[in-house]
Length: 287
Ligand code: DDH
Image 1 (cartoon, rainbow, N blue to C red):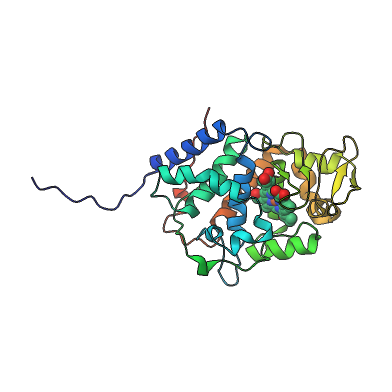
Image 2 (image 1 turned 135 degrees about the horizontal axis):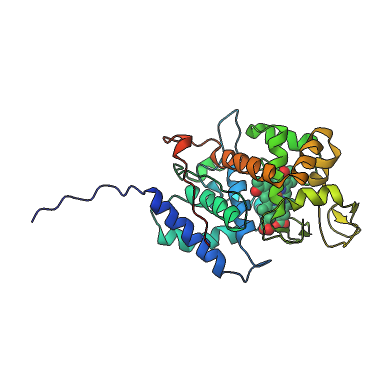
């Protein structure tokens, strides 16, 4: 008999939760990487996809996933993020209806939650763009610089001082790699668990310039195994930034709450949503 042709597939919240679950499952299984998790590099992929946003021109941001293409994939700041993009290819193959730009941001939110961080409410609506939409090099922060640079880069995205400090707390996760950025080491002792340790260590440790052949970075006096970038140290040198560092070091609930709000904002910069903020999906984390 006659059958009604199927309309375009319209994913529901449950469909996006399935994508979340597949990412969480893959994170739990693929532990033979770095410190045992792809989570940190997924968080960084979502950030570098989003942090190209320029509020004046409305260009850049997560809408487009233009890091799939050179020249953006070859920008120095994006070195190593191929690991994150490749990790997500089987997920894209399993859920071909999701755009790369939605997938990369959803994966960042999922990684924060799966690594013990706050809930990151997320909503779909990004479209992939072609190579012509690649952003120019130099929109992401340069770790060798100071507080003026941090304010210039994050101010261009539309963030204030408090939000800049909260976002920096993502350095609780992961590490620097000599073959990617030239820097080396983790910021804390649990680089696969989302905590406020980054702020605690900034405040409690004494940070000395590391004596080595690499770029200028700092190391902790107690163990000489941890690392801070010059831009991390700028957060305790600058009086206004320091106020928030101290606050987050003392109060992890405040950090989790304010980090969640600002990471949600980051992932949505420049995205022309048809949905409303209250339509965001709160994903259920795995057990
Ligand atoms: Fe970062 N970051 N980041 N970062 N970042 C590096 C690693 C990671 C800067 C430089 C570096 C944010 C802000 C800044 C993460 C998340 C976020 C590395 C080392 C450098 C260098 C890369 C490598 O060698 O593999 C600078 C400069 C800033 C700045 O604010 C001025 C923000 C806002 C976030 C975020 O997610 C909100 C994460 C996670 C990593 C660890 C990646 C990994 O592979 O591990």
